[in-house]
Image (tube, rainbow, N blue to C red; front, side):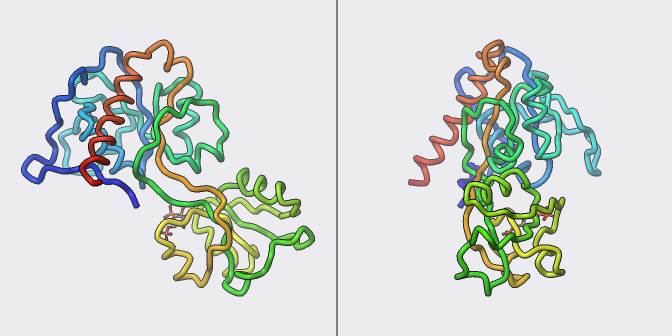
Length: 244
Ligand code: PRP
């Protein structure tokens, strides 16, 4: 279960006055669009980290680069799987992504802080009648996935010659239409598997959100990067103490 940042119902967007929360160097932060975005911004707000300034319009904001309210941060809005790429190449100093995507991409970045949300697991799944069937080296399964690298590694380390079919979404369709015998996909509530008659067979990786940092930025902008990390770490620790 995800830890939620505490909210003050009377001042839901108020940022606390954390000592030293002003960030001296300008940092570029890669934010993932989609599932992790809302909780990332909630934790940033709770940590006193300046948020992207609103554009004043009432419609969907389609801008891809947003400055923070105080100008200290520049946010780039990226596809989640691209966040580690922006950070590895230094186009962003830090970023937020899931461990699943980070491990799949194999990018060379620092991972200084796990974040208390985005929990899910990368699992092997398939039709319910495979539940008690052992994985055999001679079974040569066809496996559909959005995570070909982790899937290939999972089967290779077990000596199983799997055929990996890379899809870009709705992976659960694979076994239903005869495209694949098995799937490797993210499981959160388990509803998508259940509603499509599939069961979880093995957990391959437990995932959650993680803050990643460019290796050079971690040294050259260490004060700003470390303050950002410390602000988040303090907020997470406070929240853990409150909820325990
Ligand atoms: C993810 C994942 C599963 C589903 C799991 O898909 O790939 O399909 O969520 O969530 P659940 O266990 O809570 O049902 P997403 O919604 O990101 O869409 P996609 O499959 O089109 O990528």
